[in-house]
Image (tube, one colour):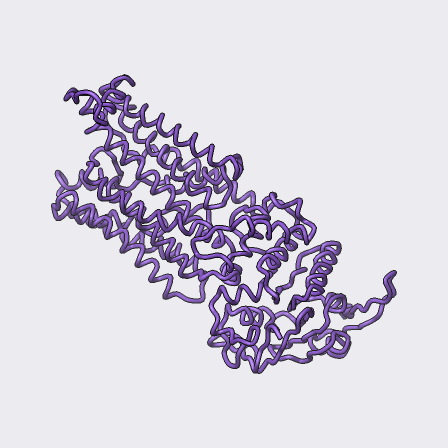
Length: 339
Length: 260
């Protein structure tokens, strides 16, 4: 633990300042580089100072990079917080939002939307519904199978339901039109912030916040779930209900994120772990730190995606490059800890 | 009267472990449950804590039927000290003990300054206040067990159920934990614990319950229940009971016969 309880407020302020710096840097970078002065002028004009101009800088800041950066921040925050909450209730640092089949469910929903030629908003709605359906199916299986280790049952049910939905995606790919639909499906499965419109974000952000709000409210109770089930129940918790509420909330935030940006793996796994390294395991401290780190990580990844190569790189590629070694290091660390 | 059972059948839906148990804890007593592996000690404890439903008969807590109480009500009156905590992350001892306050806090509440002070006081009372900020996984097994006792104290429950609180501890830590348990009982807390070592019952128990295949074979003062004859019968190995002179007077111990 590097940041103690008393230093957390200062650390959060510094974290937000760092995030703001990253945002300015990201706005400035790209195929059309902007000077900090241009950015400041556009923001000043937007806030009502001076006469608004209709130059290129304004279009780049407000219409191209701004929404994209906002989406990256929101998605990173949602995935980071959802991952931290799920690792808490599953009592396992190797769990991530993908574990409940949410991502596969979202993917199938989106792919069906593409196959049917639906407009973007409808496709995102289907993605969202698919994610919730997968998580609901996993929870229903968990509720039916009694007597077994409930956490292990949920994790295994997540793997099974995830592969079922993935099979659906694979089937959809084989029947898709290879010239129009297949590229769209592939692009969506890799995730991207390139096409996110302000309208999409306006729809998804409230859902993400709706998912995060119960997690903030229950932040201390989530810690008690880190105990064995018998201990937590003996301490007075309705463990099954609490676990269900936390999983549902994290799923909502994840599904809303996946619906606008596609599948971006690893963020929900790596970010909470980094947060715990910084502030220890207490969820009340992990939550804000995971939100800031998640937003920062996603923003850096997306900025790299659009500046390092002439063509866009899918963010999932970069998160996997960072996430795979991080996961192996985590696995090695947890093997060292357990006797 | 604190914790009591009335004609209690306990076990699992398809497997009854024990039948017709009548037991009434008294304030400030230590009652030690002994019995071989599979005698039903853990199943009984889980039923008493309300973690398993009673199959027949009932469990009462301060005169009220356990089945009619919600989890938080049970937790405020009855604390559970597990053999080892299954905690998943490296919380500090202070944080682990604060979790003992859960039943006193609303769903959306965080421990208040008062709860934190109470947790700290419980750690001090068990002599490990200086370890408050150490991670739970970084202290010794004996200190972890003391922290779990502190968590039970912090819950302010007047009755505690302890599942082999001295398991896996060395001699020094065993006697330290036993001493603290006896002190807690001295403060009026009723303590039900199980152990594999009859010596522990001789050392601190007011009463003993000998459990064999779910049946209460004998219940009464430790010296009367834990006789060579009873122990030999239950454990299926010849056991001698003897008084050993120590600096603090004679102490009763039991010695299993060497394998033939």
